[in-house]
Length: 571
Image 1: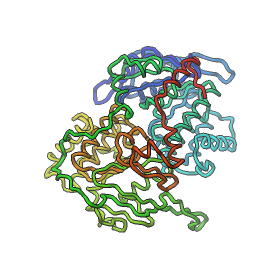
Image 2: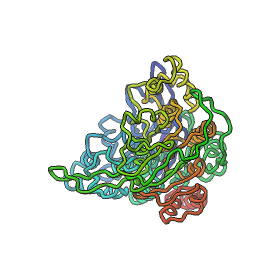
Image 3: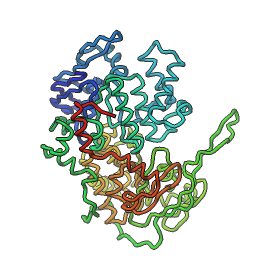
Image 4: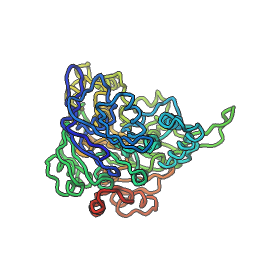
């Protein structure tokens, strides 16, 4: 048995209070097995994983009870069974990264912004393989980048994290974790930021490395499609406890606990397509939506090119054509889903529409007015009506500002609310809409889980009562039940206010539930565009068909096959 967790308790101290983040949790993982932990944000999944690898800050965490037994493989091949809770810190450092590796949920806060991605992988290799030379370590790092489908790995080796897309940064994290070929890989939402084609490749790669090395995987996810593909057994967590555990097929087809049934019913494919009819209380007085004859947002041959500079004089030798001739229209009150692989230009196009990124040529019209050539000062009146929800909430929220400050500051800038008390009241209303408690106003971003931070990002966009929002992977960090709530909130707001959304996502299930129209991007161009039902069910382009084929589904026949093969993943 590679890992055995017995009656684990993990308590966290904050503000003079103690929280039982993990409360009497037990599970085990065999060599070559994938075990999934599933649950909502704040349920204790990530804290359980951090407890296993012993990465929690010691000044705020403690383990009043429990054991974490791990089979530590020595250089001479001997196996020593050790309790991670009772090892010296020096011994833990020897195990971490070498025998147990972890893929973290948020790559931008895990990668060092002042070092290239290649140097960071080499650092991990040299730390745990001191006999490895510089040339060999570099070659190994480039090979690791190539394994996770990073294009031009020799060139990307020298890139800094901020120059990569969200999905590419996540792939770098996976490459770094797998470089030392660990015995146990802890994967905390490792495919959350990846599009479906790359996700399929990453899951296949993890299965191949698992077969090759007999590696065990503790897989934390909220995607039941991924659970169905990867694991034989799973455990469902709620409020620090495991409420249900067992074979994947049995749990998914015959859930016993009400919470498990709630999670499965919240899957996008299980949600009945409908438009919310309930009226959500608005944070400010809202005029009835007007019917626009022209599209609210109209793009005509938009191009966004970035110069490539080389040489001592940094001369322009080429251009990266991130967006290369896109023409789209988004009618008032509709949702356009923009789908494609990481690096295809989705986020760049969204930023270009909002003029957060200058466009090279073409035109962007908002409410009939061409905004593509406006100066920053001329754009200011449009900022309140055009908002964005960023992909990575941890890096887009100011860590020194409370939630109250993050929500009331933009209201003060745009003249919403006559006093601080009124703005706080409006902020509280928006927090209620995104399912956050009242005391969230006075807490800092680091005190929230990943999914809760994403809801704060959504609230920050809603406080200005905009008519158009660019949603950049806003549900990728959310568990399925909260995702369903957010989607229903967006649909309700859309119905009440005539809210118009550009929804950037790789989750086809969300697209089919939420979007009126769907555009598929590939290498900076839109290769297919039309009603969602038509594109998802009758795609015309080969790339669209490839994209849809890679979507993880609840394939019970595949689950049954894994059960018959004794729980090992078969390629």
